[in-house]
Image 1: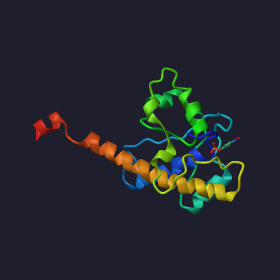
Image 2: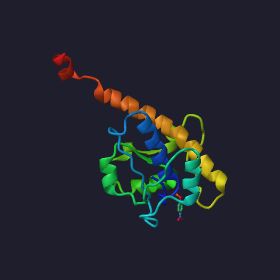
Image 3: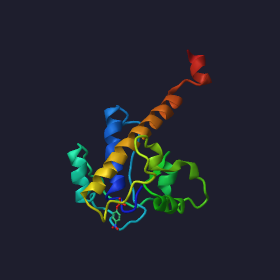
Image 4: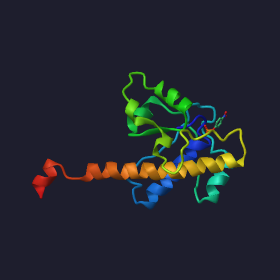
Length: 164
Ligand code: 4NP
């Protein structure tokens, strides 16, 4: 989740989808980006973001939409790009049920010390490259998290051991 859902989060969706597909996990992991604002609903990602993504082999073709309370219920992990997104997404969690699944994307970065993915919208080309650098780093971390979550889910419980 970012602000407009036309730069950072659609790029995160594209990077994550490429990694998940490469790992053969596409049928087990659902990914969808959103914005805290609905201003750009229905639009493709910003052309500068699409070009920067395309140069690294990512097809960024999701359509912008606004985040909803249902997203908080439906998804296991809701990753936000900056502190403002965190505040805004938390405001959808009216009964404070989903706090532990709403997390800053940069928690999953290991090669960068940034704590937020900076909004590139009003800046130059370099901002879009930094976004992709951070997203590739963090998405590798998210992939490790998903792998370990799936491994825990797949391991046989009591019923599984009985059956063997
Ligand atoms: P995003 O970037 O949150 O990464 O999609 C922005 C896109 C649009 C605007 C701001 C940030 N805007 O002000 O329209």
